[in-house]
Every structure is written in C-alpha cells, then in structure tokens.
Length: 222
Ligand code: G16
Ligand code: MG
Image (cartoon, rainbow, N blue to C red; front, side, top):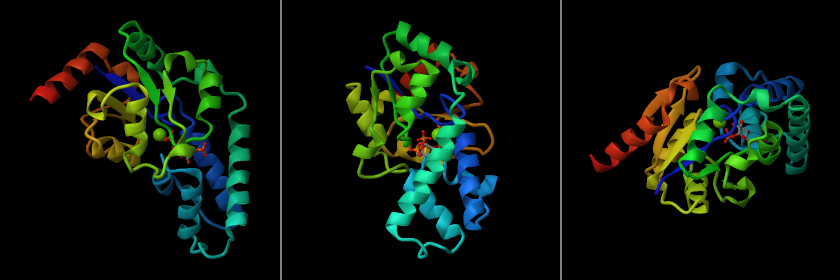
C-alpha cells in the first residue's frame, strides 16, 4: 500500500504569493512590515496563528481582543479571496497535472493536507478535485503544522499508514510534520532550502513517479 499526501499552497499552485501579498497588506495597515524573509515563517501556518506571529513581530500581541483579531483575519481572507478570483487550471504548478494523472493510472490514492480553509475552493478552481480521495478539514484538527496530526489524518483518510505515504511540502513547518510521523518527505524547494527532506526538487517536472516510488521502497527496506 502506498499513497501521496500533498500540501496545497506552494505545492499544487502558487497561492503562497497571494497569502504573502494579503498579509503584507494587512501588516501595512497595522504598521508592521511583513517582508519576504518573515513570510517564510508563515508558510503552512494557520490563519489565526499567522496573525498572532505578525502581531508579535510588531510587539502588538496584547493590543487586540479576540473579536478584533477575528475581524483582522477575516479582512486578510477577503483580500486573499479577491486575489484568487482569476485562479484557474492554468495556475497549476508545472508538472502537477501530469503527476496526478500518473498516480491515478497506478491507482495510488492522493490526499490534501493543507492548513488552508480555502483548499476545497482552490481545488475546484484548478479543476483537480477528481484526483483527490480526501481533503483533510483543518478545522477538525487539534494542532497545526509542524505537528504531524494533519499528515496522519490524511493517511488515515486514504486507508494507509503514515509510514507508507509520500508527503510533498514547500514549507519547513510541513516538512517537520511529515518527518515527525515517519513519512517520506519530498521538498518542493523554490527559494529557501528545506531541512530534513528525503528528496528535494524545484518542481514536479523533475520527479519521475516510478523512480520516486522505488527510492521510497528502498528507504523502507534499507
Ligand atoms: C496554507 C498557507 C498559509 C496559510 C494557511 C491557512 O497552508 O501556507 O500561509 O496561512 O494555509 O490558509 P487560509 O487562510 O486559506 O485558511 P498550506 O498548508 O496549504 O501550505
Ligand atoms: Mg505550502
């Protein structure tokens, strides 16, 4: 048994840049500079936790009530959703569609393990819903990435052990979660190097599905 577990933002599509733009915009309003380097720490982190990190960056963590924070998070999400308006199948990252088709041909189940509450909407816009047997609902989780819960849940949903799955991530928090449950980690590295991955590539174009499965098999029996 095997299966593939994908992060969404930065792996299936480049919505990571829209998250960054939306947080930067909110940061400007609050007088907090969210730069590209700091943004790396927000990748894979839930909406409210990201907001908490930004407020802490500006030493403003005690300035807002929970109600106000929820409003700020909703404001960021509205800005983000606006940026997503034109999203379509052409926005799949290179090689993703071919990889998903190859998985389907081999009857390898695929699941989404994304911290994003917008994941179902994004998958629908990209027209790739049919390739996934399961999407973890991040609202159902006790802990976010880097905790492994989301990856363990994704494996359960497709009926395999975490150690049988291959996880794909672009963020350090996600890679840490994948490795914490003994899963094989493929890093999609664009800017920052990812620590602890089993394999790293720039895009799915660099991945041969059969070779990947062989490497994972050998790792297991080694
Ligand atoms: C993504 C992004 C994060 C974002 C989080 C929550 O996670 O990487 O930057 O804060 O989802 O997204 P939303 O506000 O849409 O619920 P992932 O796990 O897909 O990389
Ligand atoms: Mg990501």
